[in-house]
Image (cartoon, rainbow, N blue to C red):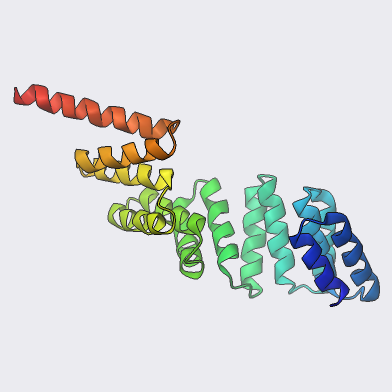
Length: 225
């Protein structure tokens, strides 16, 4: 096992000092290889040492302008600092350089969501959901983007997919409750709000949704008397 592989194993096991040592040795052995700098940048990003992480990612790009995972690392760094415009630019660059995985599509979608551009985020979140079929967050965020784009039926189908992966997903139940309320199906709406509250008793939005349904039912009963 080479120093690079050792460093990655140490990083996976959260042995950060050992990882730093291994990556440093890997860079010393092959200073022209951008991968060493990218791995060290990822370590620094994990430690939230953003300025030094930026330097390592930029060094990797200096060595290889097509180092797609360096752009992805920069995108994550800017996202962590809530600099969403710069994060978007780097995630887009990673895609343009050929990075094709669900994570980069997901993160690009989320940067757009954070900039109130849910409509533009939708195709990226859809692609992330297609590539990461077992990723609950990817499936949920795609469903949320569908709902925000007023594609209610598709959003409902997607939230049901989320519940297949994680039956105790309170936010998926809440969003299904909202969708059923949109169609004035109070019984199903109440069921999902109750489920959300069972899973997460302090779910404020579900609590508000339930109150709204109960008020509607009370009003309907009064009108029928």
